[in-house]
Length: 252
Image 1 (tube, rainbow, N blue to C red):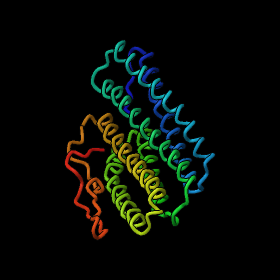
Image 2 (cartoon, rainbow, N blue to C red):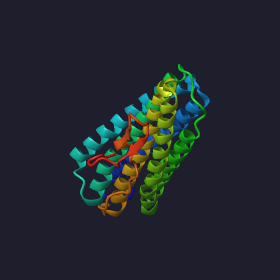
Image 3 (cartoon, one colour):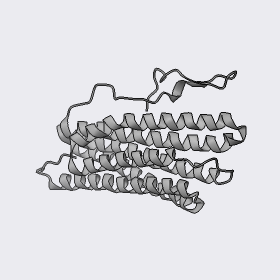
């Protein structure tokens, strides 16, 4: 995020420390997501359990950021770009904490999935996982480089996440309709796919917040969205999938 030199040097130290905490959080959730996806692909319960345990540290760091922001707002009374930077740090840490939660959810579903018979190999989930990992990495790079252009790129690419999620969603519905015995395993995989899609949403939230922190210009136009699963219906008579579109008011 943007930096300025202040007369009170301790303020600069506090701002740098706040940025360092965000970088640390970003690295932790990036590793957590990578491990969660690997645990799913390998059906590795032990790795999944390690992801869940690691999320506690992310939560602790989020609480530390929250406390530091409150303290800085109370004692420093920042203005202009400093205020944007500090408030944005709190919002970004909240999104990173949610990314960690969703990665832990993927791990939890993987553990549950390992207790049932697996359906045919899933290529869609690893592809979706790779895409959201790319978005998360790019926005963390944007944080390090203070690069608003990367923020816009991440924001635009979230639509690709939605499109891939829609494809996975329809494929999994087909498995359910083909054989009711697939329903339990498929439900767990559906939740995994949704958690990955939500990680993409939070990476996009970070992109919007960071862009504002750097430029001071909010992104007012609606972000492109292609998730149509909110109103996906199955005709009970024919088994056909009916996709009516994204529900009004649905938000990431």
